[in-house]
Length: 122
Length: 112
Image 1 (spheres, helix red, strand yellow):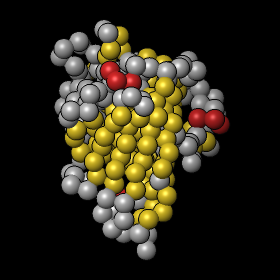
Image 2 (image 1 turned 180 degrees about the vertical axis):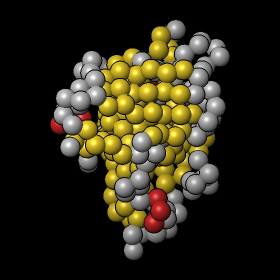
Image 3 (image 1 turned 45 degrees about the vertical axis):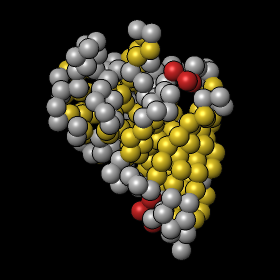
Image 4 (image 1 turned 60 degrees about the vertical axis):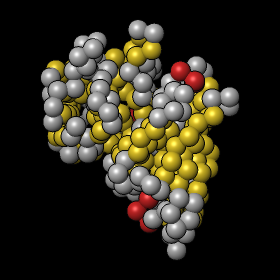
């Protein structure tokens, strides 16, 4: 069964850095693009970043572009979110997710990690 | 694509039906395969979003058949045939046909 297990997160001062990890199992990880989505306290869900299956192309939301980067290690079935120059407004629960549409002609069921809390505060 | 949910909150008597609407600012019909990649999630307090319905009308594993999804074009509905206490939380629609994926604002369901 598909599983996404997240680690990382914590409390950091404004301007600091953190790295989130998301370890995948139960599917052919290197064949799927991966997303990060976040949710600020009391707010809705916001897409943050995406990386294609082989890591060659990435995309990020305007709100984090230039500060956050996404990468992956297909040998370890893991995707990362590198967060730099963190701001108070980056405080949120961050989720990794597989949101592919289809694979091998079959509709793919979306899967999410359990979330990781990132708190930016002085 | 902007996703707009209504109502933003609703209060339902146990055993009664409920429905939540989600509207997209443009069509989310995938022209390549004809699917509508519209998903519904329930988020309970302190929990990650739980997938209920994916690709318009497919119930996720373990989801009771009280939940159903439907719609076309730009209008979508999540229906709960008989609301129970365990259905309390915030419901989100999400489209992933067009990049980047976008979400509705959420609909808070409470029990009367």
